[in-house]
Length: 232
Image (cartoon, rainbow, N blue to C red):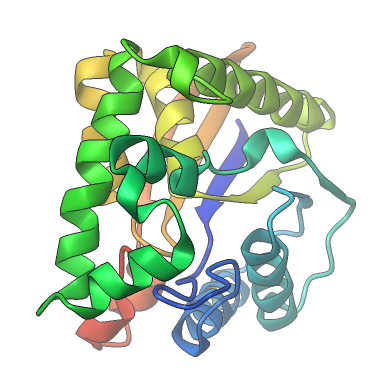
């Protein structure tokens, strides 16, 4: 069975002006994954990255610690995350600027929980499909984009070489939805559960993708530090 592994990026810079940077913890998470794969003797793979900085930097940190340069590497924007800033802005227009969102979170006793509540409501509005005209990319278009990227990545395994994709939680959730035929009413539950640096592995059998493991964080848990498990 040829494997296609989807890796969520390490923790990004929540609350910073430029979210699209790994935090120091995020870089450590990715290095721990690379070290884990090195100890487990995981073979070198073709590497695909989304086009976001947090995808590229996650791949770089993981590959460096893994000690196995990619057999081949390329970028595929089909694995980029949906535009969360636009989705939040359409749901709550008064928070459409980074500065306004920053002020809102700064006033909250628990900024991460406050953002999660806001983000969930905003994404549910987007995914419901009743306001598609408000968005540059609808939920349906997003799923189709990810499905096309997943097909391209799966095609890279034709030679029997494993493929590792560094991406975001949204595309991983959409990919698993496609593989398991999960209804839209439940797929968002997957998104909220995707851990930073979590590993989801798909197998390709007779031309069909199957789920081998979902959102594994063994490489983080084995350190015994609860702070290594993050979702934002």
